[in-house]
Length: 60
Image 1 (spheres, rainbow, N blue to C red):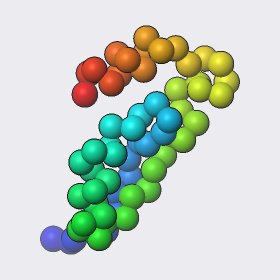
Image 2: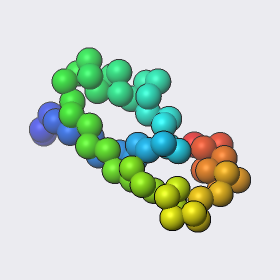
Image 3: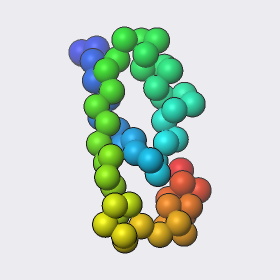
Image 4: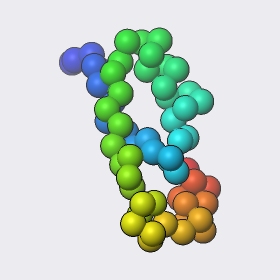
């Protein structure tokens, strides 16, 4: 068994759900966080829709 040394997780302007518990816990345990999806869900391309983001957030 190996220790967890890095967590790869979505984190962007729209997906910020990790801020309350995951990021503080990772920091406390010394686990690095590799964020992906910084430009996810079409935010810059104009394809972003608030309804889709709300649905994704409420499904979690």
